Amino acid sequence: MTDFAYKPTLTGELVVLRPMEEQDYEALFAAMNDPEVMRLTGSHGQISEERAREWARTRKDQTDRLDLVIVDRKTDLVVGEVVLNMWDPDNQSCNFRILIGPAGQGRGLGSEATRMTVGYGFEQLGSHRISLSVFPFNPRAERAYEKAGFKREGVLRDALRWDGEWYDEVVMSVLATEWIPSEV
Image (tube, rainbow, N blue to C red; front, side, top):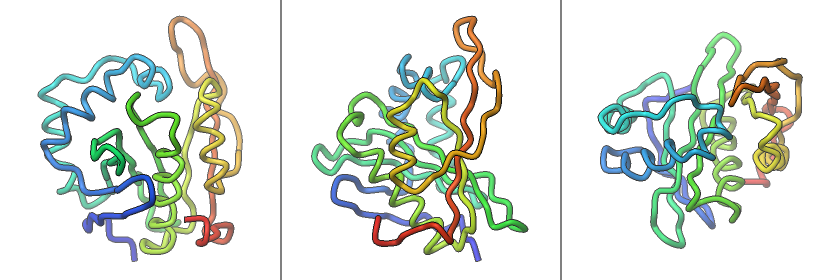
């Protein structure tokens, strides 16, 4: 049975995924408001400092989702977050999302954090299906998702309007029956 109330600490070679605390808001606030991160995640509008602080403070109390910060083991700095949310108990499925600020990009941290989170979703939470979406202008993320076992399912046409242009949204998922635990 899925228990999103429990917030684990997961340790990999490159990253530690741990429960989010209020003091993490500064690093997450900076990452969420980075213009390139906002574009890659399709996030319109900057988040206020007050809202970011409240959001970080309340993540550990959420029982319907798992929010963990990504800590770079090399620097011991918070560089982003991973999330399992939108839990559908009848279908044992949830959504995955990840955000990594500039300090954590391009070094494999996101790939490892993705594999660790997906592994936790299948092996500890008993999920059957984990899905996500990515925009075509983020091929680095799409490759990381494919390495973690995600397969392209389809496209939501013109799902994002960014700087006056329309962009599709690529839908991907991985099933428990496809998951290879040794990849974690």
